[in-house]
Length: 291
Length: 318
Image (cartoon, rainbow over all chains, first blue to last red; front, side, top):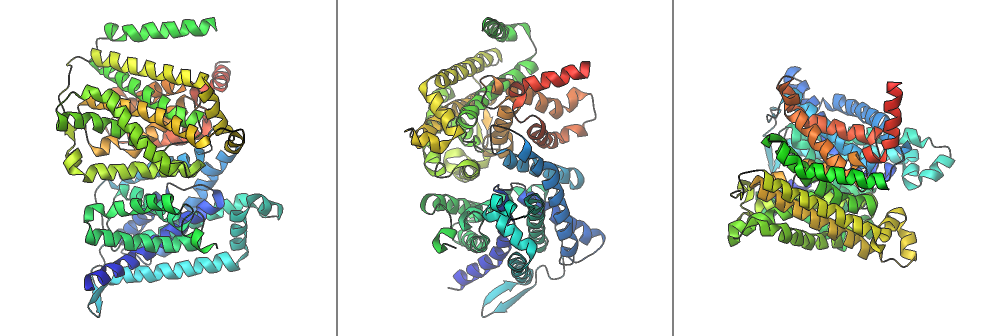
């Protein structure tokens, strides 16, 4: 029983961070209609920013949220402006050009990171990295708990932004119906740029929160891109609420898989869920709630 | 029409005598690899270019073909050459499942589902050690010392592949495929069973890709999951070969294969040793930059944008 509870706790805590990654991707998906396959790679960039700040300037990883998030927002804005928006004007037979472009961007980011930092594994050690507290026999890893609550706070902030501010409303309008939003006077070009920046900033936050409990190398982006993608499919394409639950489900399923089947299969659990969702619940969790 | 036939004959003769006039094994090797990519690129183009179902997971079929050939040797002790047919057949069987799952989704979602499929099968191949030897990989003994037999086998495979796809595209099936790409709903309303024809396109594509995989096993004599199921170097490369050459053109993937193998090798060998060694470490970076460049400036490929390229080149000369 303890083992099961412990596994669930670990799953929920990591699930909170997964949700944050998934929300960023699903926002971009909802507004632009494409999956951003450079998502994990953007997180990798944020993690290296945090790494540099903490090892050269000795800044706390959580403090570097304030640096990495704006930096990645800018990077996202630039990528969208320079590489993705121009594609809308290009006539081509295949509509998947934008997705392929994000793959190219992801590869370039990874290789630039390899050029600068080499392929070595890096980690950021903090005093609290391995500190643990107990509640009734269940151990809670402190940095994971901090990360979880940061993730909750950022998600709440995002929902406030989407529901209450003008830009947030414009983003939701563009996601619902691009043409109608344009007709109502929403500058959809600007909205896509902001959304891509916002998605990048969110995944940057996830990167900063992950770094005290994870290690870092240039290829770390790929697996996280795929995780984000699984979460997006699981939650329902373009649904932010779905992404939160998708992230939690993936986190719990992964830690159950690792505890009861074997560590080698941890990565596979997500994909099995992915295939099952496609077969039995195409449309994802969104479909169950009809929201 | 006449000059087109003449060009084909010239290219055909050049291809036939190539290994006899070029004694260097290095260049023979490059052309063999390029011919293998002609097969994969053409197969990808049938599904993506003509039928409009962009696959990000052709490594699935390539890897399955390669592993079929390898497992024939390690488990059944028979020649890996049977894999040239069997690998294609097993790849088709996998394609049936992939089609069943992935054709529930349209457009970009299909692309992403195939991408995830590629990752799943890579993890399966890594973890199912009793069948695939896992990360150790499969090592077999090459049948021929010389590159020449491999060259002709690759050439024959590429020629058959292009010819079959040419025949398919001239038949009724070809028109169904293009109609699905142009407007799936309209095709459906005209009585074309879109799911059936998408699956047919996928099966043919998977067969040739599996054959190419089996050829790779025979030729390179070593495979492991990270090589044959690689997202970047197989799945994305297949897309690049198609896009650089020209999507939905018969000869595009053939042109694209030679360009891509040439570019990759040029950078991998650090411009054939002319520039410092560290440049070769950046070959993956160059690969990514090519993706970005091609999509931004040559969306229809060398063959598709030939008129545009000609105009620009002439203007530069003038």
